[in-house]
Image 1: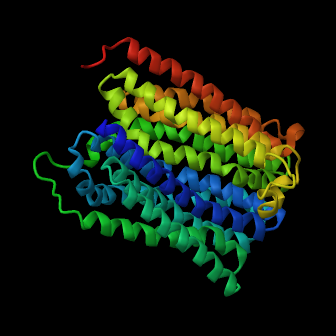
Image 2 (image 1 turned 90 degrees about the vertical axis):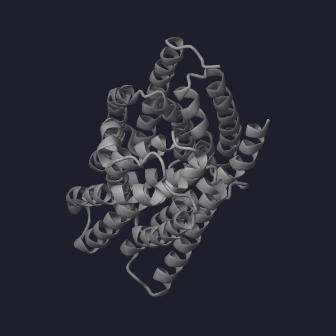
Image 3 (image 1 turned 180 degrees about the vertical axis):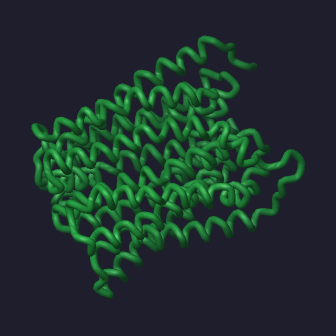
Length: 419
């Protein structure tokens, strides 16, 4: 009863946290799709996929394994791990930022150096700061301090909005604005999170914090797992820009921004439910995992259906058609992208449950088997134009859900729940 009450209190904090974190990136995406011309919006989409690719190394080699390891520590000691794990993540984050150079090489034929330079620099900075800031928030959730995590995201959102307005007021070139504002927002909110961690009175007495070598042993499989969809996303954006046009990719990017609230909600719920499914898989408690999934799928399913009806098409009561008009230039594109995001949301909680089960190699195998589906979808761009990315994403997500469900079923069938 006490545990259920705690969950009921923390779920709103998780949603607030993910909402404001995603509102920050939404504000950045909104600035990009409204300030940039059609072709440059497509270039932004290439850099955005490079940004996501750049976060793979720090997030999966060090930071996610550290979050999983934190579940083995007493609740009151988990916050004290944050300064240590952040230090371990800095160098991998700096290495991952080199993905911005890859985006520059791909985008160079599509635009001018006045666009390439600002995008490359600001993308690299954002790729360093973003996974570190996300890690602080996730660790606070693992420590049952979900509201402090939510405040970090609120700081991030407010800073992003102020930075966008300030850069526009000083008439800074548009190419500096999206990732420049995101970098400033991540820097200030990360600093705020660092202060929260340092104000904790707990210490790491007893068992020492995890080492880089120990985290990397688990994390190498997560890097392998995450590299597949991230590389596939980058290749898909490149293929669509070449087979269709940068403008078609730009319309797909606008539709992605409109459909983002689905993943905002899913991420917020996952933030709070992650510890439950990790512990359920760790202790082989199938019933606890099932209850967490029922809460998650019910909320995401109902909210997602409502959002599809509201924002799927350009009609009088749809506020998103006025906020992101370029998303509705291609009829039906937003609706398909929302459906694809609903399928993607189905992956999140399963993924963390597989981590708790210690099935990192299975996760990696599933990712590499399903990532080509996204590329195949992108390869239809000559015929499907702006729809190609959503088609590929939907197919990839459905394939991944099926394989992850099978892997989890086998995990629980091979074990006996603990008392």
